[in-house]
Image (cartoon, rainbow, N blue to C red; front, side):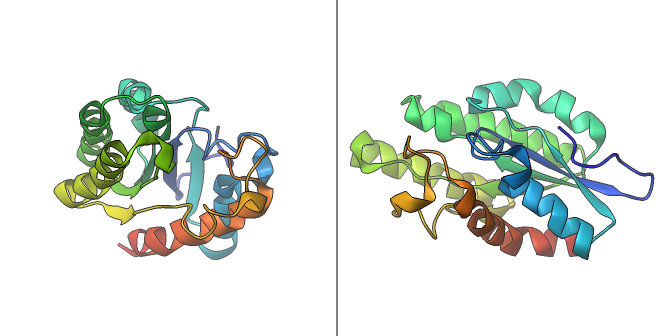
Length: 191
């Protein structure tokens, strides 16, 4: 979904994610991606935001559809995938391969990439959760992307920032997500 119609002079930021970026359970206009679009309208009118996030998306689904999403020729791609792989207990190596494909195709298309990392609850076991978390850092280093290790860092342990499912960030958490993402995104817009 595009938040603004592209104009000839505008550059785009593609947000390529899952329900955490698709404003699941809250109004679309209140999600962090819409807040990013508003911030850019105020501060960097030469950029627009295209949100290609789908609730329930896995890294495999993302790898399958990245080509179509890149047809808009974004300058920056924010990759926010992997949470559903982890929640389903899918192999970390498979997730890494899929995310690498998304990153590589984005970079080959000329986009700068910002990778957003996510962590799993401890009930998935220490070995799996550690491998899962490390996968994002390894991908960011290997592909030299901008990186946010855990974009829910500021509030992940505070139930009041989540919907009743205790998975999806509530409306009051969206500005916190935007703040964390913006710190890593802003330098990419200056390049």
